[in-house]
Image 1 (cartoon, rainbow, N blue to C red):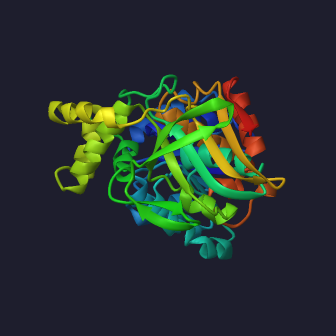
Image 2 (tube, rainbow, N blue to C red):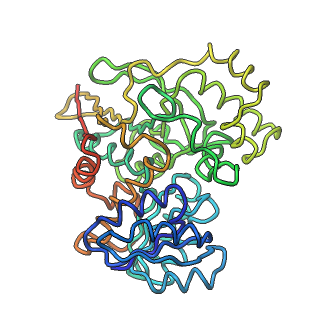
Image 3 (tube, rainbow, N blue to C red):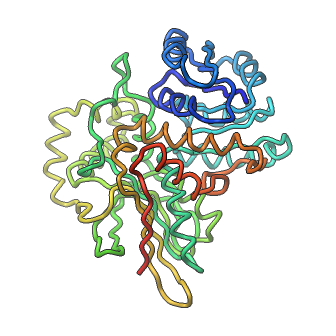
Length: 392
């Protein structure tokens, strides 16, 4: 099995390649990046791995170079960002090359576009798994565990941590070597501006982001989390017939929620672009920081909510039930954006290269990845991350 790691020399790509290099069933990983020196350095660093590693210069905006690289691979692991620019582009090229596909993308708009390529992928015999990072990947697999406990799903939420205690998040690692914001930060600003897709009243709706959702969960956990433009609502509503509400949520402190809201307002008013807003996350200006400090008193905190979880409300055995599926011992996964995204991507790849479980078509994580196997692999990889499911 030959894996093409597109963007493999980037922060997320490097983590994914390091993990994938230890997987069985892979004969070669081609680290493909427009920074050929960085790709070669990673291949050299991992030369003792049980798989063969090589480097290749590939710019995904060069259609001929992309097609040629895909034609020589069995599977492509795509971590090139930002996803709204390159997700549909690379997936279309992979389908044309009949190369199986997995990415880490978490924007709801390209997710909808890529799901629309399902018939083309099936006709080409290509299995494509989209969004196999922290979110929607891990979050949606937690949601699958929670929803499995219910006969009827009314509300279904996924949540990931930003800066709550123990999340490991901070302002480090938000800029690349050139000092510019990383791609993940750029599309995060897209997630918190304009309108986003959620499920309301059992149907897809568009709402402003950063809406507080107050949750009361098993174990007496109570707190607020804030809506963000992750595609979980788009995909989970397809598989679980959510009758009520569904959204992706951020678990954040009031101060961070207030600062993001300041950025959101200024983006929507044309005072900031997506790019300049991303730069202000890592280096806040005094004026916006002061505005956020004043507004923070109006934002509710996460209280006792877990850092990384999915919550479902519905009916089980004829009775109302609330289910919480959350991670414990997750600090190795939450050291930064690259780890939280790259490790799940590689473990998802482990299932994609298994021909027995591969189905042609374009699939969200919960439709193509076995949650039990994934979380077992995650526990084995980290030595500490486990899933706990509680029902009341």
